Image (cartoon, rainbow, N blue to C red; front, side, top):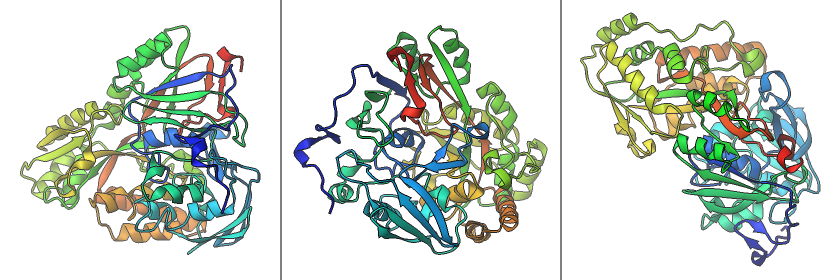
Length: 517
């Protein structure tokens, strides 16, 4: 068992024996619309959660968003692993970085890696990640070769194993620390990772404060503390940025960009995300069980109008559930989503739709423009004869599955490949099928399973086309657009947002000219 500093040296996840903070480092305050209810990295795989956990934890391999075409993050670079190689179609050997410390002073080694990817952590019935099999269902086991070498062995060939190790659900935890805290669920609020910042204070309904971990293997962090302050009102976030109260603000609406850019010392920084806002339909609901009704709902949505009216033309409507980041797996010639109200009316008539009420449920603040988008879509549906009403609630997940008809959601591509997008989010182990039980496809799951375990590119490409064809025909939901994610920031703060919700505050991506960095 590894040596761990005594509990007397640890307070709120920080270690008193760590070096004192440098006087010239800033205390950053980031105003966010919401904070996560837990910092357990295997559980809080959300837009608001990953922006924080990304700086507390490391993965074995890292996606490089700062180089390469368009900052797609397709390039993989070392992190806690220094190198990796394929032994055969089912085995990946990984060499681990030596001399790395966890934030509690414990040594990082192969035992932590084996445990992080164990069923207890990721895929078992009692694991903290309900959708664990969506990420690592193909993994058979991880074996320790020596203290700094491990082998990942899969059940079938996995073309994306390296990408999985660089993405969601792959943040490395300290085995002994996790086991000591898991019984009383203490790990969720007092996590320990190897990242550049460690937890200092946790009050999720008000703020979450991180402090620099000067023992970070990647170099001393460039901020002394980082506070994620919950400020739900967009106007209050902007006012705080302009006044100097906040250093960065999130979720800036497009119509607020010009206002922020008009000031001399602050500016906006925008990226179109490799993420889509989507709708989810309960295909088991009697009103929605005929796919022609769902197809009609999709055909009635004028996505270009939504983008122009709500996003100042700066969001993007993808041609299918895919992204250019997929490289040679991207279906560039795939037709765009159609807008055809007349065909929608015809399909409704063929399906025998008689004006039954369809309820669209949404939260008011979680997704930017969620409420105005819902209001606009309801009017588009009404224009083709759909009787739709809006249900605004604080937490859509509190609605029983059998009462949920339509909800909004977002789909991020976990890896730059169809397996990381459409298959991961709509497959049998993620929310649509497992949690909400809104869709129970057979052919879709068969095709996706083949796509996930096939190495030949041409065969995979055909399977990916088939998978998307099925999804669009069955219409268990639809894509609206890829949102524009805009941050407001001090001009003197050199920080680059990514096409993902990660907020990377590592030294290579965070400098403060106001503090001489």
